[in-house]
Image 1 (tube, rainbow, N blue to C red):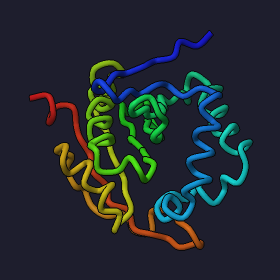
Image 2: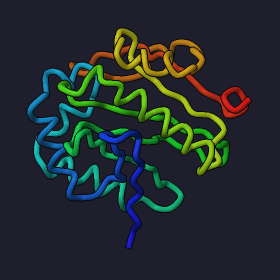
Image 3: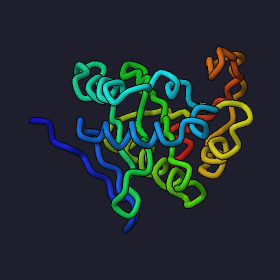
Length: 184
């Protein structure tokens, strides 16, 4: 049986490792906010039914030990608000990326900023990671502000780095935080 990790960010903000029963909250949030979320999240258009969210959650939970990623649901005041977690972790080179998305009604409350801060500490202190990066589409100001506020270094632009909605490529801003730079 898998132990579910919970991280208390603050009194009303908790990150809980994703479980299959979270698929319904994930799907319902995506389904009710398609236009808002799809601008920056390419998976929204492919999430047409509950089974799509269930498949995603299952893929995270059932990943091999080698491909295991920590992905968390964000609960704000006890209610599902979004997802945050690691992706594309390279254990050999001790680096990972933090990805996140948040329901529209929970924007501008410091939820992602505080959650990212907790996760990069978790990555450095508990997972032995050396480099954490965040990538966000050029023009996605809300997302871009997160790494900037937290002291990540802007590394440059990945040209045509992500295929977004309507089959359009977008440039991606790349930010990183290195353990030795942060833990001086």
